Length: 128
Image (cartoon, rainbow, N blue to C red; front, top):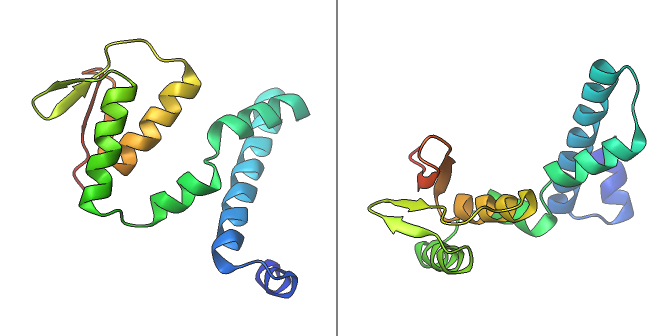
């Protein structure tokens, strides 16, 4: 039904998929809060939703394969901006980041092909 309504209202397929993604996250958080707290606090729901969802640009980029050049540019920019220290194949955090900055850094590094390893306090190549 949602797909039909989306086509009727002129929403392109990519945005429809994004809205489905947002809707599923919103539903998961609401269910979690209801189970955990016994009720859904709308302010808490909105705060958690805002912290767990990716903006359309990042969400869409994460679905598409980036070129190697784009990955290298993302990596170099993140290393410079967040003052990461290169150590072999790892990129170490040299400064504490607030949650918002760390989230952006993690998203950028994920797009560049790296994941955060809390044991090493470093970003390591994500081999799949």
